[in-house]
Length: 484
Ligand code: FCB
Image 1 (cartoon, rainbow, N blue to C red):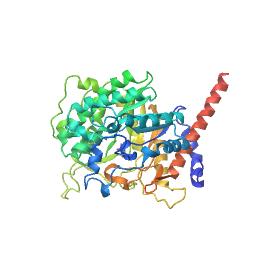
Image 2: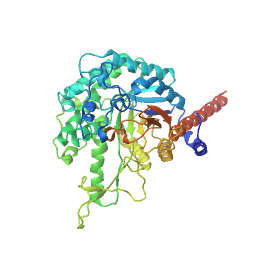
Image 3: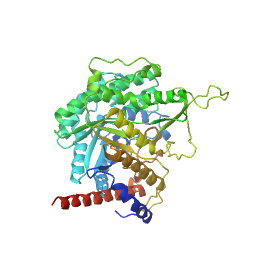
Image 4: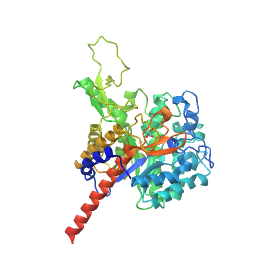
């Protein structure tokens, strides 16, 4: 991999950073099926709630859909070669349920399965560890017609689908993630309606959340039974550390309530087998229908927790003395503070706050003691410009990655068992409701030609991985010399 001079100069300091991570640390990148594959009507794929949602006028920016996306379905072989060229040691992708079971339940579509079979083989052939997410938001539309995640039967259908996938890929895939960010599926999909299927009911959101958790819980034993004995199973949650802007009791109270909603809603059931006390009351809804045994299934032991980290939330309680009208609706008795003076923001409008990653990892370790943690997504959207040629200069993204990887290094030094990092994303792709307007890739995609151009951030990341490899190889050989 050739680097531009500015990337090389910056790298010199980063060799030390690379050395903070254990020898077997995974350096990966992540994508998701609907955001990258395209080919939504090929080889027997069924329709999904995202096809339906994105195809409805007004739901996504500029009416963008995932119909073509980055055409990864057809360009998979060259994309895997690109990953190998970057030196990635792991690739997190998602499997599209509607490709495998087009009607949501029943017949398995062999041609859909073949795609992932080829992908896994090619990854392994190039020395890249496949990390498969089984649900990254593309529920078969046929299940949506029966209530989607509001229907308990969807959780059972998920377990059947997982079983079919594991029977086919379980001899080679050792890293499994049941769900990606169920908080987003439940709250954004059913509570606020900004994501598919686009409902606006908090009561529906907590019901969907429960069935998503149940789906996870039912899938874990199937994976354990059918995948290789060395297979490892986890779930990926989007975690948002919540900070108080002052020390007033009202502010600290709203901070705790927001933390319960953003993080504990899914962490507590997965790790402790309970919902946080007061959660549903604070959301003004009744608890979901929980059947005997549900919470025990949901708390089935997992091997690792996947953490997606992008930003933090800063809250300040309303000032009772103030005569000013509130600038925003009350959020758990407080106001979201932003823009934060002195802070930089990404193109998503998310505050750049790497310290939040350290704080969150340390508190996770204290409160939940996961066996291992992988940062399954971290990254930033910026307005990249490609002027033709082989370069895209994205210094802000290089800085974002460096600062967050530094934060992760601090957590590792503090004893948090982080075992891998996945940049979001390998490629620019379909950013859900924002369509193609937001670019997160370490590789630029020129959508009209589907040409891929490695950004400076991709080059920097490849150099960091190489530096890590060189450093750990050196320490390995030092150890070997010491032993002899
Ligand atoms: C996460 C999603 C991922 C991507 C990033 C930016 O919430 O898991 O698909 O859209 O945000």
